[in-house]
Image 1 (cartoon, rainbow, N blue to C red):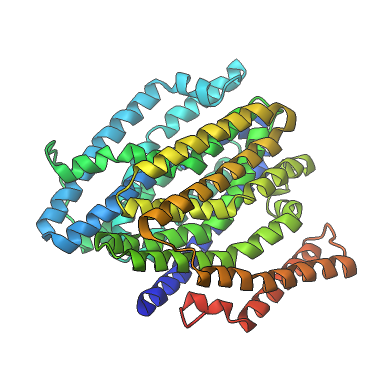
Image 2 (image 1 turned 180 degrees about the vertical axis):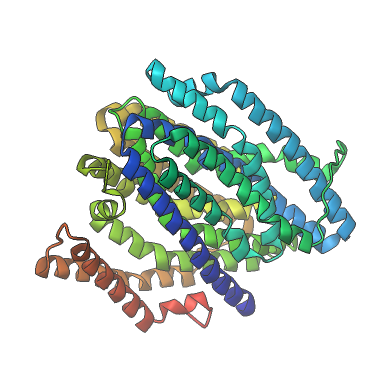
Length: 502
């Protein structure tokens, strides 16, 4: 266990570093977009339409990867190279044909789709939504292929490489924003092209690992049929956050202009920062978790989940403190320039704060779903997700007119927390207790550096009130983060990354 845990911690650090660079470019992309479009109706339209490839299609791709990784792990462990390649060729053939047909249907039905996801638009603005929908419809095919191949890379241990694929995607969109300025259609085309690039840059590694793909359709293959059969349950189980965000933005189209864009900027900021660590952790643990579950080694699977929670607690606790204390300052630093003014900052900071309250729910969503998928139990995450999504829709409908952005973002956080509680109980029944005394003791020890961090923030606020100047805000932020790390180091809490006896 010690060697595996050390490898998990080191892979986590490497993947986190790469994802950080990718997310940093995503920040730059959003900053340029916010500077050009602000929180205008054009920004609303693009962010709502962009939700399809960026959130819904990505959820479909994630589902494909989630169901494929355990099956591919089984083929590598128990079958021949020829059988492995035949399985992957058939899966990719099915997915390519189905996704291509759906993409064409999406282009044909673009007016209907646009009216559903962006209701109530003026006629001249609605035409923009329809064209953007048609431009981005083919993205479904590229997203599915990208996530399947990324899963193959992860099974073979190419964690860092599989995490770099969004770097050219972000660079391409940044380039389109610099060149085209406010041409929303060119930006949409570059978004679709960016997803294609993410797939293409993985192909050389697939050839290196001796994958040979050709069109194969065997409707009687039990493994491929089982994969496709489980796709919808996995999609529904894995897409709770993404579907909730789409739901929030759809309701926001009935609020004052810019509300949907503010929700998008706030949620993007939340996901961009936290997914650096949460996605990195789920990425490096899932193949090993699948291996343990294939072997029915639930004790080791539980230990792996416990260690994952320790690492995420260490990182996400100070994130939440900083967001509660400095949410408006962070949004000002990241977005406020050009067309993105003070009013835009005020709306976006609310969304950022209340979405951030779900950070531990988001972590549980990623880890628990991976655990159930490794167990080949796809029904439980699906049913719990459907319940929480329905609850989110009900809360949105009940409160969005009265409390606006606050209600929409807070309802998503509440539902993710409820999801985490329910799934904690259900997973414990499947693999045993992973909320051990050791984990509880580690969480209790984190209170000391957290209190030191809060005390540092309060002292610097008293001695040096936060000014509008960027440096005036960054000094107390960096000082408090340093205090947290120093106290954590003195308490030995950092050892969890290397499993040297925490």
